Length: 199
Image (cartoon, rainbow, N blue to C red; front, side):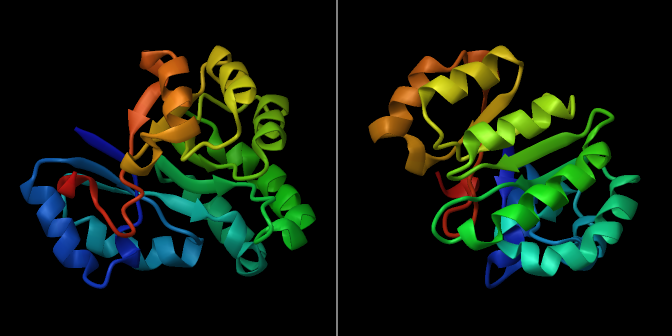
């Protein structure tokens, strides 16, 4: 089994969680929120065969992230996993939307080359998809997608993937899961409070 999106570094005991994941034989993409977080995590994650460090530029941390753009592009040359990156136009992220767009467009070239890319798109699914399409980047994986069936169908038709966690298995997200082609569906834990190994 592969957990495509887990915030191991947000746990109280990330090394303990990493050991449990390793013992459970679960492949895990350990996403980060900033290049500086990736830098800190990398030497620890390298000790585990089942874990893959993922270079992040989270839209809700973009005020800090904009100062780390060059570091992101430098790290991206030697990593196979990117995440999470994207846009967030929710109430929480709306004030920085222009900065988010600017940074995402600036790092687009760094996302090419067969990397696995985990994408955040809360409140901005259509805009996020358009940026990846215009930049000819993909396929990517839309993590915890809440953008509705129409945008999801368009993204799936373009070859993009979607990762689902246990909190998405009811309500409108359940309908989304039923509608997306099964070969476009991946599994994630999100991992902040309930790692996949507990499911």
